[in-house]
Amino acid sequence: MSDERIWTAAVLVIGDEILSGRTQDKNVAQIATWLDVQGIRLREVRIVPDDEAEIGDALNALRARYDYVFTTGGIGPTHDDITVDAVAKALKVAVVIHPEARAILDRYYTTRGGLTEARLRMARVPDGAELIPNRMSGAPGIRLGNLFLMAGVPHITAGMLDALTGTLEGGAPLVAHTIGAWAPESEIADVLRAAERDHAGVAIGSYPFFREGRTGANFVIRSTDGAAVAACVAALTVAIEAAGYAVTDGGI
Amino acid sequence: MSDERIWTAAVLVIGDEILSGRTQDKNVAQIATWLDVQGIRLREVRIVPDDEAEIGDALNALRARYDYVFTTGGIGPTHDDITVDAVAKALKVAVVIHPEARAILDRYYTTRGGLTEARLRMARVPDGAELIPNRMSGAPGIRLGNLFLMAGVPHITAGMLDALTGTLEGGAPLVAHTIGAWAPESEIADVLRAAERDHAGVAIGSYPFFREGRTGANFVIRSTDGAAVAACVAALTVAIEAAGYAVTDGGI
Image 1 (cartoon, rainbow over the protein chains, first blue to last red):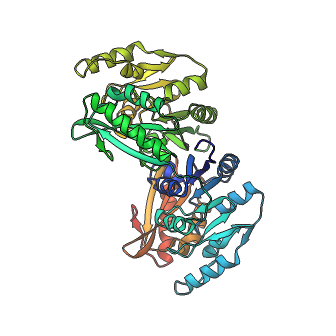
Image 2 (spheres, one colour):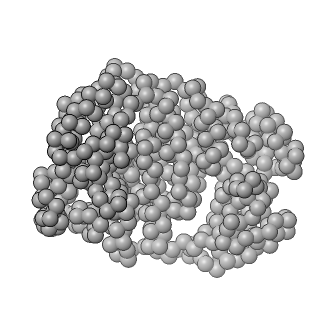
Image 3 (cartoon, rainbow over the protein chains, first blue to last red):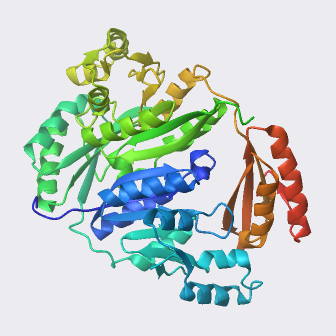
């Protein structure tokens, strides 16, 4: 297990609307969940403003560290959609009109008022890019090797992820098992620490909550080794019950 | 307006649970909204795993660039709560037990099973820190100059923000006005570009949506200069209506 290659990814969220608090980001969670199924670990997220230099600096920092980088936002037709230009500049390549993207947009807008200059902006890609199909709207996503430029609108990004499913090399997916107890996590802290120490390669996360006037916590046991997860879950369940709390398999 | 000092902030989210997709982050949006009222711009967010080196590197990068840095997560009583240690290491200070935090926890846990060793972990702070009161649970947040260590659980962070309201120096808040239209943003793109160009110091964001089977977009006009926002909104409304679309003030 420990010899296995771990594939890693980062997400770069491009969006003044997230930083202003106006919009609640939903793409990080959906990309994270999707990556998990592909056997790829999301290791870092950055959210930056709609600013060419900020986007470029963050992109280059993330590209240097992770196997895959996904950006979200800024690939639409309006003046504040600057992702393609920022990425091309960071990669030191030209921006070109992708002929297939142009053809797709041309078809899509035939019955929708025609391919205006603004709409044609969505056919602009960094030189050398491929397209990521988008069944939800005309505009495709953009792939450049291990870099993926996705939409900001979550259901469009969902469609693009769907088109990429199974096409990215990954490793063994992380196995995660959740158990929960109506216990203050501070009463279980020693038990958790011991369980993590006793099970090599297993990480335990403790997530407290306050619900229905009571304190509880969920514990997520993670590893690429399913047997190690099962053994840790079993040991932890016994230990929490010994501390006087019922354990709910699957979490509360 | 342009001579005015802009105060900036970053948020560092510490959380395997966010990167795994298990938990939807809610702290970024609430901190962003709160900062806006304080006249402080949220300029960057990073989400990193529960890893001491990753936390330290990100913290030092953000501290160097922004006036204020807020972290969320990892200040509880369990083994995976490593924020205090990571921050102390990054700042090259010792970790100490804060006497006031110890007293608060002692009082809080008197009727809740006593101050165990695990719970005492929540009194540990980087040397030199002050406390941020937390009415929701015993454990306080931690302030070190312009660095704020907040909880991961959103309603606890909300209480800590409340305690900080009005205590941080900021500048003029950004004025934002939203208008909306049932129009594809690609048909309004030229109008938006012209409006932004004609109104110095104003930024216009375009946020498309697909609802009730129809395409629309909201446009957010932002500036620290309220009069400039009003002028831009008026001009943009006229221009969108001239393009054949009704404008809804306040957004759709």
